[in-house]
Length: 498
Image (cartoon, rainbow, N blue to C red):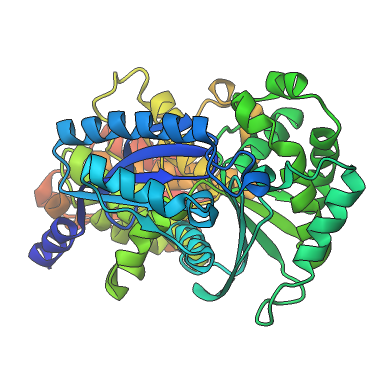
């Protein structure tokens, strides 16, 4: 079993891979590495080129943008050569595929830099965006809305399967040419969306928003509502909550918007038209909630390469296993710890099971931090970590559990606004999980064979710890930590020595 686990971890590793994304507004280089099911961002750089500026009027790529893109690619190719990447992908989207001189531009880049560029169709772009969403939420259902500089892609997800994809020329750079009146521009948006093809539902519970404009919108919403976390991936809000932000963005000068977010001025200039498109989409599909996805076509390109076996893996657990394998003192102990403490947590859902197992994988990954600060470092690390397959409430639960794993939780050191993301029951459960991990790891000194010689279970009003006398594991610290766990669970501690 151990050899199979090690083989699975080893074969699931992603060699360092570069992706160049030639978009209508930006050109970006991202280098990924780590576990393929949950890749980490090794390097990330973008240049605002504006290839699609005035494309709707001229039919051609913006000459200034083309020069900036060539300059950016020259640097990106040099960076990748220095990294000695084994795999490199280069994709171009709406501006390049729609421009009259797009093929000429692609040929020039391919000859100059000795690369192969995949110019994706509108349908393919929507599928890649939806695949990016599936990278983070394997069982996702809803409408994916990916807005770029010159295009909007919609994709319909149902139970983790992409059912439909369609592209529209409704990116903010494409809309910028309709100067007459806002009413004419708005009517044009609704007219285009009236041509949504059969296969899309009339309504949906969830919108998954993909793209730089939506991310900028999320940052503004966070600031307007004093939201305590600054992680865009998995940021979930109600449509009603978003309405005020959309009105604000549509009626506010760019210079004022810049004070409410770290997004670039070039991006912020696109937000009013992007907001009009989003409002039209909301009117059409009537979603109840909005989820912002930090994963898009670049992550989707990876997902499309996966075997069915890798696609079925849980991104959260794969990321946490990878961290344990690379940072813990005794990799593999997390799985043993989870099986050991599972008998004292009866009524937990499948989602909770993943969180509990994830916590066990992460329980010893911060051990190199100074002992006086491990607890706080855990909290800060987990709430901001690059993790897929988890919502913001789950992040806080994990962070609180790991904080409690290192010491009795002092809420005075925790941002109260962040704690408000959880209800009292979830906070208590996180603390109990942390206390049980603290007991198990200390009892066995994170050695699997030692922990497997003991058992913990519930019996009437007692939480029982069973030990073998000959192993000599019993001590004052063990008794104190069992007592603390029992107090949190409202039970009496009981030690059984055989």
